[in-house]
Length: 234
Image 1 (cartoon, rainbow, N blue to C red):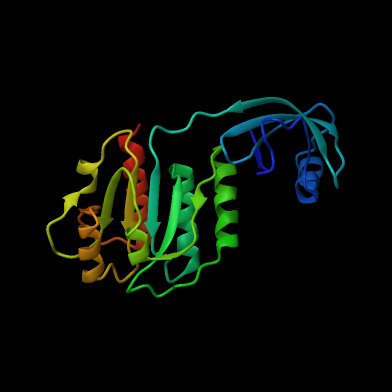
Image 2: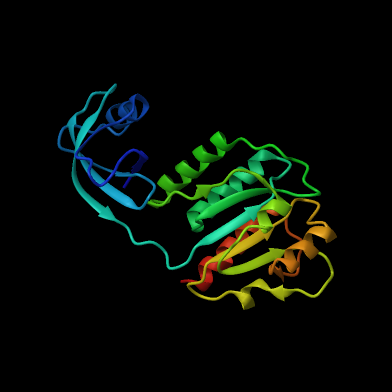
């Protein structure tokens, strides 16, 4: 099954026209013709089955013949991850986290951040591609980059964790996770969170945690955290 994505689709949509790029792929590469069926999602949980009515390589049209709202997970996972020095490493994190299962991502700018500007358009394309590849009907929400202090000052529900490398009392993330609970996890930059940031997070009810015995890169730590949550909720 190949999944297409279009955010404009709603449960009231009855006919649909693919973009020129998608139309060319459907007709020239997939070699689809009249009567063939394709799956589309709007990234908000809906899975649409479309039947081709006009296999035009510039403007392929289809009728929506069925629509199903896919069930959401019983928990919400929000990772706030500092941008990495190399963009491709953050993009790798976005791709793999989407495949594993994540709901929200916020790039946080920290005291030790080497990169403070991101390209949200590029990140959005990575998320969309990973969603389609993993046959997921929910597109993770990419939030605007925000200063660390402003982020943790917000009102959050659920479990709150900050993963860091300082040699102070920390709990094991895997032992603190609870099934079907909303979760926010803070992951710092290559230089880790500053001591001030860690104290600030703790004062805002974030629990300091460790992700294991070894020191992990930012993007690796984020994936380990994401997988730990998914594993607990299996």
